[in-house]
Length: 234
Image (tube, rainbow, N blue to C red):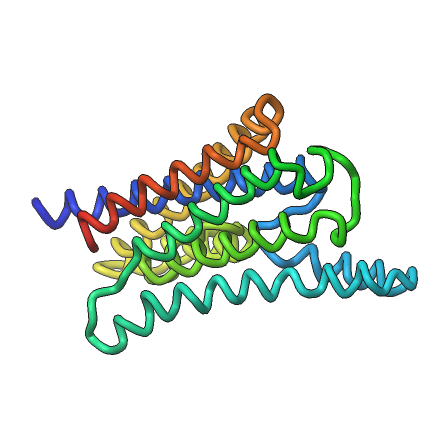
């Protein structure tokens, strides 16, 4: 019974981070017309700017995914590498760092570090904002991915949707313990998708009314999850 409650609390905790990522994705788009919690669109924008001979813009765009990668690597050092060495993973630390970066994004927006909220500017104009959000997203995504055995993702839903489709089909031709595990994974994936959508919708409202201060909402969520994770490790 205790193990069941612990597992349920863990899922709720990671779903809160997925919700926060949905908020950040909305905020990145509304602030700078960029989806910053995943890297797919940056490759397309790089190609577009390259063909238009916008060299500086193309360089700036191509470097943003590097910060997402850096966040994932930092999280891996604090979590995955420690697991490999039979040491307790420090899930709370990358999440706390993510909270700090999102708080810094809010502070920077209110302090005039970036362009006016909602202005259609190039990546070079909002470069610091984009790198902060990408780094924070990489930290979150890697922590959630490791903690859930890659059943959940925090920042992008493409691969998760593919896994969900595969799981829905597998349900009809597997049986026994495997079917039970697949059913559980399908439920978690569905909840993850719903949490991200809910975060995106809520984020749109937050940022519409709060502008850059809207980043304080996902920052607060990450901070609380980090505290809970530190006090109640998985």
